[in-house]
Amino acid sequence: MTFSSQPNKFYLLALKAALAAGREIMQVYDGNFSVDEKQDGSPITEADRRANDCIMQTLAPSGLPIISEEHPIDTYSRRTHWEYFWLVDPLDGTKEFVNRNGEFTVNIALVHRQTPAFGILTAPALNLGYIGLQGTGAYKIENLENLSDLITHSDNSFGQLLKLLTPLHPGQSSGPPVLASSRSHINPENRNMIHALWGSEVQPEMLYKGSALKFGLLAEGKAHYYLRNDKIWEWDTAAGHALLLAAGGDLLCWPSATPLVYNKESMRNPAFVACASKLDSDLLKPKFPL
Image (cartoon, rainbow, N blue to C red; front, side, top):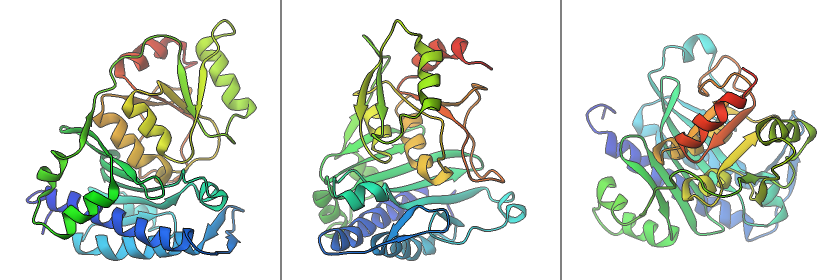
């Protein structure tokens, strides 16, 4: 099986991996679990590990390389030759998981060279998710459990499954700007970006949501912008970035206003501004320091 000959089978494989990982996560979430600390000080639980193992095993038949937050990363000299690869965060929002607020996701993206071409993110505790496929569109999964049953008990193709989902077309924003943000990420650097983009006269409304669900808010048109100027990695953004691009949005690095690319030598992302609409990003570009 090669991607160029049967791309829909790869997308279906990713969907199955995300749903299966979500079930593993919820088994841990619904019980008692301990929280360990990684070398960088970030938390990790048994749910992260089980979700990672599940995704790695499910995606293995694709034959494509996999970069996962919870798996050793191949050398840059080897990665530079990859045309397609999976970029995975098995459990994005471990802090939300630990706090049991439900706002955590499974993120799986398919990256073509340095651009996310396909992305799926699921929120198993909220029973919803999103799919973005460039050239096809962006969709909301209203009920993960129903979709899981459809995959398990039928021969539906990926294309047939997309027809059962809710298409997303946010369009250009209107009214005061609405910013999607994590509750813990409004730091001085992010406030400086907000001031540079909107000045002191405009006070954007804040819409708080954990993990990559902020990209879902943009794809649905519930929020207009999402910006970050602190530590965030490629696996944190790739699936949401693919969703945003498929919905007609844009994501630009700060302060250069250049597109965010993937499979960099350092997997850490620069600061960025995500916009629900390409028209919105075009209006903001003149305000970037460049």
